[in-house]
Length: 253
Figure 1 (tube, rainbow, N blue to C red):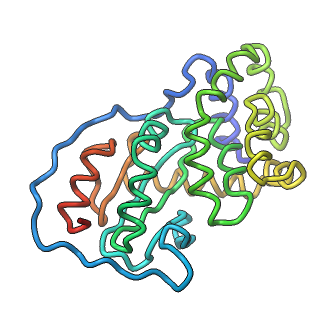
Figure 2 (tube, rainbow, N blue to C red):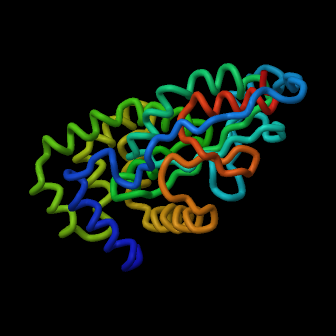
Figure 3 (cartoon, rainbow, N blue to C red):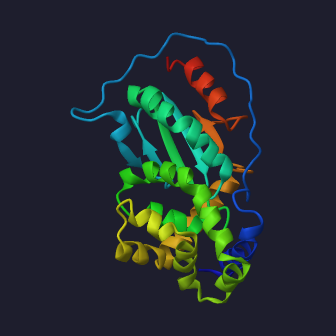
């Protein structure tokens, strides 16, 4: 891990008990949406024996996309696993977005995992440790479990959190994952202990996650999470109802 990454990791680890669930999350907005326009888009048949929600593509930019890769409506989320507003969006949106929009072949959904703070590094390492098709479902499950992670860290106490900064770089993600209970969470969902440990100590992957995240934040002007783009246009909302209205307006109805 490079020096700037190390400083950010240590600083975030020290502050995590003070701002759990809030770090780098953007304020929820309920931006408006225009009325329906144009004709509905026809549903697209999925590959034989599958639903579109089961089709996962790793995008060239490093995101995880579910649905029809050629869908005429594309949703892109920049989300952080430690972000409480991302968890709120997931709770409100994930089932309906998957079942009523992605499954029709008219909408695809891509998740790019942002590293807001130290918690996001081991969480992302573990979420992406297995098969690509598991990443989006695991992210949704993690967001549903997120408050338990915060409770685990609060119960661990400030001294243990502060002690993470004294560990060698390669040991910090695994130590934080254990303190937060992430290792057990992912082990219960198919990421075996040895597999998880290998991912948590993979410094090349860690640096790749941080580098990709930093690049997205700059090139897409992401000021907080979650940030959404719909068909390449940055959304002025980050909650489900205005997004749903826009998807319907664009023809997903």
